[in-house]
Length: 357
Ligand code: ATP
Ligand code: MG
Image 1 (tube, rainbow, N blue to C red):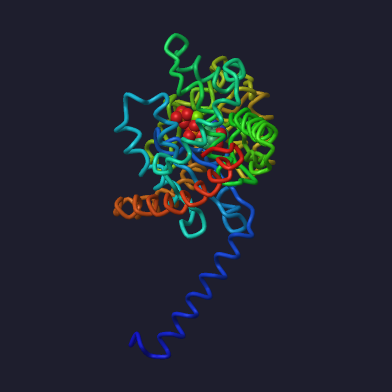
Image 2 (cartoon, rainbow, N blue to C red; image 1 turned 90 degrees about the vertical axis):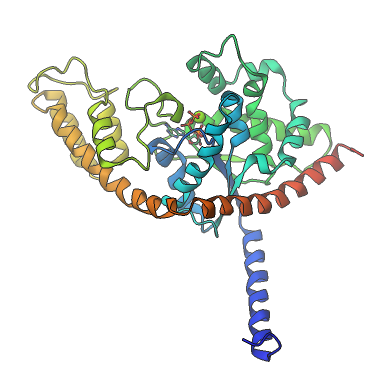
């Protein structure tokens, strides 16, 4: 089209109108901020805990998804390459599950340095003893045997996470159950900041916990986690799913098929509860298992088929996006620019409230 023609100008004007309309529309939407540490690809626990809510809400909310590389470094400071590589893995998972970068802003924490200035200001508002009482941090320290080598950065990551959340004037944070203490800490900081600096610029947030707030790992020991080696990943192959289901912890005293078995603490049943849409059938299977006469093998076959059906479409989409990792990273860089504008605007208000020069 000739750039001087009326038709061109008209098209251009229409484009601008659409753009303005779009911006107005998204400005009016409530805001979601949530995200993941790039310490590995995403797993089924992420899906039921938070990802399914993100996909469901991306139309009605302006959604910011943080790939928290700086936070990941607090316990992976000696493995920066691992963290860097996993940024693309996490973004690939976002795309594979149907998060749309036109609706949800994917961004990389370390590319928004204003977040770290907010963190520094918030560090003054939280006592060390309050940080030491955080139950999720305590559990992670124990799990990772960091008692005698706890980095200050790890102890204070809930404060940096509060900065991530508050920087966007967030309304809702879709997360798994382990994040509840972080949301509490975030709201404490918001209240304390507003009180001390006589401001209203920080806004308290609400958590939104998924259908299953804490999916157990295949070992039956702790929650499924990237770092614990007990995860089924959203990109796993059929063979990987099958072999992980085979390894799932069941009832160690259920030796023969005829023996009565225990459902509580049995990982296969936890997964059937989470992923099997036939709730009545699952209840019947539980009764049968308790009575005796139902073998683990039958249940594991059922679960393998179910998980394969669930993961196959994601795996396929992931393989498509994997062909162009450069484009995936470009999406994250572009998103980081957009995210940065929002954070800069909140930081200006924070600095003003604190009367900083
Ligand atoms: P890491 O082991 O590195 O901490 P992770 O598997 O715990 O990784 P995170 O990036 O810390 O994953 O968590 C991202 C989001 O996923 C958080 O909202 C968290 O609550 C949720 N989540 C993680 N694991 C589970 C799980 N097993 N069940 C439900 N939600 C989960
Ligand atoms: Mg975690």
